[in-house]
Image 1: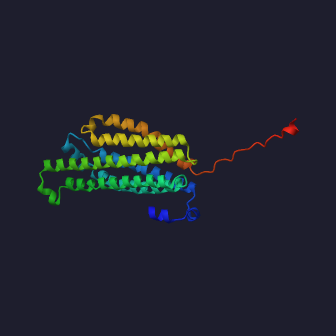
Image 2: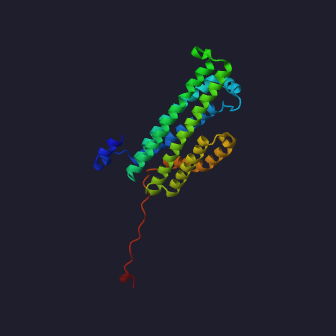
Length: 259
């Protein structure tokens, strides 16, 4: 991707460029889709977990297995939409800084790759709760512990992915502040959201007892992230790429005639 972009001449890039308004709409619509599906998938996959009670966690998954299973395809659609957003945002902001826009896009793609790897734990969990095949060699208590370990691996992998997502938002916010095509205040809010993702998810990875502070961390993340991310989506859908109204210039007054 980067080599192809680097080899293209500025004239060729200008001739084949997607209009900024179209890129903004693509990014905004994909962002809406991934937000709705991500809220559903996170609720489904995380809502089953009772950290101090492996047996209750497994029982909850068994009783809502179809719903739990549906979180996996929903999350993969989210990650595909994330790739679309990364591409569309690069297209929109490349004329501000191709290098920084591309760098930001790569961090979002790294987030997608790490999150996809974390999601591979979900099929393992489903196999464990089914209790068929080679899993029958494990006693029920052992299976329950394995389910919890797989859920922890999924959670920690996703927290790490969100650190890279935060770096993406930090870089994107910096590009927006530099750009003449986006409000600087929105760029600052997006960068603040990115900082929140980085700090809070690093804390979730590093702190051994992060669940004791989970509600506080989530509240802090919401305060930092919601204005920037929702503001970005709204701006992409309603204002991004639209031509600004031309300023009305007042003709200079001829002082000789005025006198």
